[in-house]
Length: 502
Image (tube, rainbow, N blue to C red; front, side):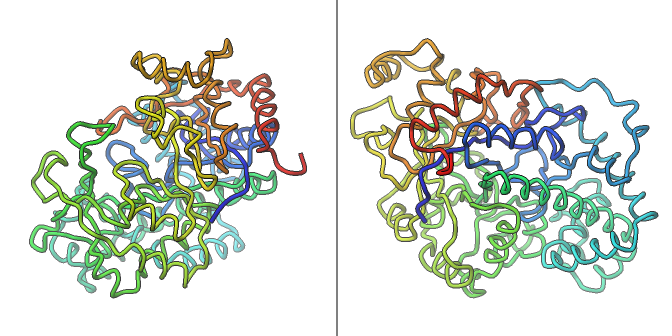
């Protein structure tokens, strides 16, 4: 569906300042929303909010529907009486500009377990009723997730496909017995989700009250080692004997990698999904719309045709395109949920068939300015080639920052950019591209916060095809300066993207 002319900022919550070593849903999140409001932005775009596994990637989570416990604010738990100041007495000195996940995770989990025990012992009747209501309303995914995580802990983190056969095959009697044995751990995982969604709901309500809509992110695929694949093996392409992915997801060689990207996720058994009227996907969209206003679908082109790589391959080069029932899928979603507020991430190898699917359902596609200046006037990322129903970015979480990109751009790209702009301003190249994005005809413009702050390569969020060292960047307390707010506000108003009442 087309959206009004507007703009916003891309920032993952882990990037907030925090004394706990990783950004969370506490005070700094509310200050960021105030910055958005005061600079006339209307959107806050986040990356997937799920519980991350190895590599800390929000695109490889243990659940497609659960929240990341690392985002829970201990200070909010303090306000609820579930933690005390004494619990924070011996916090280490965390790095300020990076998340050291190895350092953060044990400390954060220790605080959450202490809060859980306090809740178990001291929860009021009202709190107990709220918790029970939450567990009932989310049971369609929460029960599987909590049991999956408890079993994973009992197996020292091992992937589900190498557990005992009775657990791999989900034999009812074995699951009933282990549920009783792991009752305490299951309670903990449900409590953590209760607190995540309580804190997120409060933050979203504040954002909406301030005129900010939240753009969430649905990765098309889920991690193999996830509650979703364990609980619904029939809708994924798995090896029946080993439980491993028989066909793996990825993309062929592209801008980001000469050997393609091999993600390792199992691709979907679309035939079985279609027989089930896409029930799991409908539930996934419903769950997502509980806590965001707009959904960005990552790797949208995979709904028309997807790159499938056989088990055993070490790169994505030897895959093939396989047709997917995208039209039937989105028609079924539309019939059940109505017209979805969706943005389509349509980067990569895009065919006329992908464009037709996107346009049939009026999903805005993505335009990235960093891709605009390396070829000829037919380049679809040049602003004069944009349709109105599009979202323009200076860059995404997979790109370098604008300053980093410009510093490493080749002479041809720099020359074309200079010709296009007429000059490079003294404000910094990031403001030239921000101005270019805001002034384009695309209905929506989204700017990574790193570009507003004018940061270089050190602030890059992700290097595609690199397994470690990503998702770590954080900004410093006090970085959202008044001069940045005012400059962004002026440009937003000048280019007709401010809220109408402003």
